[in-house]
Length: 202
Image (cartoon, rainbow, N blue to C red; front, side, top):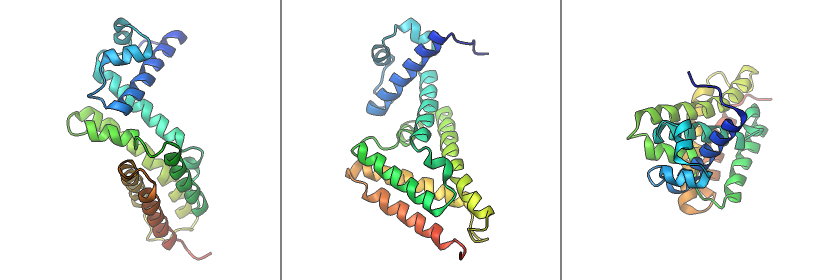
């Protein structure tokens, strides 16, 4: 059982995780040492290992941190994807975020997955769960449309949500390489056109 932290202890732990998240996003997990994290967070080795037994425990906390951050960055749009208008607004928000970030970095979860999924089974499971949270948020909106009869009976909200998430990930990866949002815009527009084709007549 994890002991309850004091307010100061919780703040220190959060500072360590935030520093580790920034560093691993910028230079990768392999390129980030615990000494790097100590320096960035302003903590000693004993403080870091008080909260995390080893680097792997810290990286699992980073995955949880980045999951919350990725989902939070899409709000309030992500929790309201229950209409074509809302889906389009979310699409525009995602594109705008990438433009604001100058197309750098891609998706933190996608980056972690590329680095860790083949070499660390526990991290792969954590990341699959993280992507599952993201997919479920998309699916809830599509399911609401389906339940209201706004999507045809042959529409599959679960499959549509998975396809949309896959489209986002592919678009973000190409944005990172191309340094523009053309790929993300193209793939999201294609997915939205497919969803529109599955709507029922007004």
